[in-house]
Length: 459
Image (cartoon, rainbow, N blue to C red; front, side, top):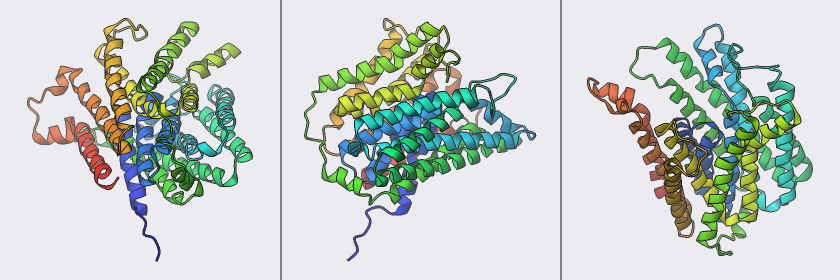
């Protein structure tokens, strides 16, 4: 008798799509950039881990590579690209730009995330070399295409440093190396996620951009959160295609071996060491490296530092999120039990940093001797302690998923108190409140509740 699938194909498509949609919306609401993109990266990894019934150890590894891979695309600037969509004369150029950038984002996300599936079957040297080659490919992309603006999707009147070609060449160089170095079956899995990520990202951002076009023709309607609608569409379609890749990969031998060789309880790792590891990693990535690069280059870090000389290129790559992700992988290799902290606590940490920056815009963000630093430390410490607790208990993956969802949703609601007028409801009708002023916040709550219900009942 043929064994019935625990989850249908549509659950594999819909649940990751819904989870990444929420994560993408939260990313744009409480913290943009590459570190903000760790939120949808963490959510897609946890969703796929639950669907594939991966053990905790395997899911935690997948989580690290997912926050790394999805975060990479956050280096790209696209505000001016979306601006093209509001002008009839440039709408198709803007659509080409969003499609290219979305496809590159999905390609990088799928390729890097999928390394997490085959992590235990590839040597550490091969993984590290593949990531170094990714960064070398980025340098080539910057210098050959992005810096000379050979194909430029931002406004030349106020030029922004683009990085889509850097990410594209980085991903291609990494995939070529892995094709040469790893088992064919493992590479097939990585390539599947990379290509379906490329399709999902291209469609998600390309089609999602048309919400901006619609909004430019409907300026006086109650609903006007067109940018957020674009983010939700991007996250939904990219998550759907990555979920479909997981469905196609569900019977891969490498995933069965993860389950058979589960080592989640084989090693005792003291909580103090786990917390110390995540604290040092967080200080390095969020404080020491950015502060040092700004001091050395005398340039505020905004997406990408300018290149040029060898010194400038090194500074640009050290400040780039790809180097932060490289550090995450190094920590994973040395302290595998800290993987949950990287994926959950550090993902939340940036949300807390962004929240406090908005509450106290004039604070010295690099000084550890301020209340700003203390507030971020306190909030992150609470999440880190809960992460340590849940990761050691039954149903840990479910509880960690819920922790990530609701801690980020809480941060999104705290943002309402940054400006008093955001809570002013005088003179507004029920429709204006529900479909206008608070539509995004309500959407977050409804989505979070639905995802939580699926996690608890079906996970």
